[in-house]
Amino acid sequence: MSFSTYRYLLMTTDPVHIGTGGMRLGRVDNSIVREPGTRLPKVPGTSLSGAIRSYSAYRYGKRGCSGQGGHCGRPTCPICYTFGSVGDGRSYSGVVSIGDARLLLFPVYSMTGPVWVSTEGLLNEVGFTLDSSDTHLAKDSSDAPLTTMDWDKPLNLGWLMIKTPGKVKIKPPNEISIKEEWKTIGGRIVLISDKLFSQVVNSNLEVRTSVAIDPETGAAEKGALFTYEAIPRAAFLWLDVVVDDFRGAFPSKEQLEDWMEKLGGSNGHDQKNLVSNWHLWKKDDGQAKLKEEVQKSLGWIKDDLKRYEMSTMPTPKDGWKNKMQKDNQDGPQYVITAGVEWIEHLGIGGMGTRGFGRVRALASCEVDYQTRTLNDCQSVKSSSKGVP
Image (cartoon, rainbow, N blue to C red; front, side, top):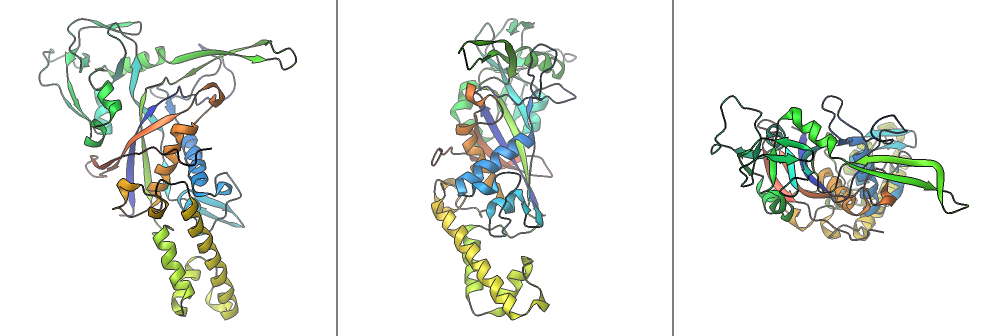
């Protein structure tokens, strides 16, 4: 099987605003993107893909490969290989599919301080284990609230008062359980029904008011007051990335070195196979064309090897992997992780100049496509190396 699914657990460190575009009537002027069926806010995969590609390209030293055009399109470029390329009359599809980041745990004010609200279905879907065997709930009260707190009376979630919640234990994947962020909130979680979750979330989004400034007077511009909403700070989200490496030729540092040895050697068969696979040469093109394409390809490889050495990855000698991943084969999933790491510093979405957009990746896990369980969970080590 050529594809793998990787699940990322994220936490907002700033409010996040991914707008729907334009003004509209409603509670706020600028609303955020929501799931059509549940009305729950989300971060669209399209927004994530653009930011992740841009930051990965920046870290690798190929900013020209980050936009919608102007890609180098070289088979030796890990950015174009991972995300796809358009240009020079040729287009190649990428090998990754970045899904939407969906809400998992949402912070809400209560009489006992901040709590994080979720549903049993959401936690189970993501891969958390729940044990409510010690609760004293009635058998027919499937919508009864549960909490990890020691709390024995009704509880408010913002403006909404819920009845006394039962007790539940929640076990996250191991790599997540050791995170300080989880240790902070793990004992302050409240589980409610799906039908209430959307109401609680949409009633407790962050709402801000801004005004445009008249550049001539330096004062507020008349009629330019507007409001906008955002997913608040300390919300937990989850994201799936599918890597379908149907080509099986990711240009890792080790792979580039192997290609250089083959193209620079005397084995004409290896040279022909390689430039033929890259659609640079055909059998009836002749030896002169072969020699020309081999030299061009060697130039590409040298350029990309140099970029590996000069990149802002934590350990350039390991390629895209960080120290905790060095036992695994380098691949497109690590290009994604490199881009995700910089979202913590450079942010995503709108209102970035107003202190919005930063999101921290806590861990990534490989998803077993048959059992849907999480395997090989690894901490995502944030790196600010090279951040402008």
